[in-house]
Length: 87
Image 1: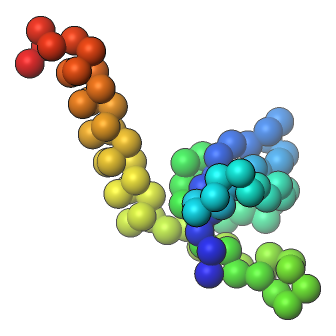
Image 2: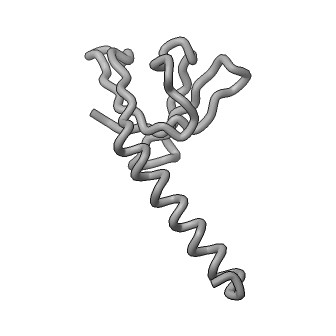
């Protein structure tokens, strides 16, 4: 099943998902189709029916947490590189 990032929610109505492997590919769907506890930044696994309708959406909690840790670590490295006096 493909993995998507919940990139943003527009006007509290539309969820924009980006395919993890190619973020130029996006899916827009009603926020009502998302799991209740889904939030921006979550990694989601989508299952589709044979006619390309969304059959199931799972939040990948462990993958989301790992991605957040990587992003936070990278941000800290960038901050230290740009401000070496804060070592």
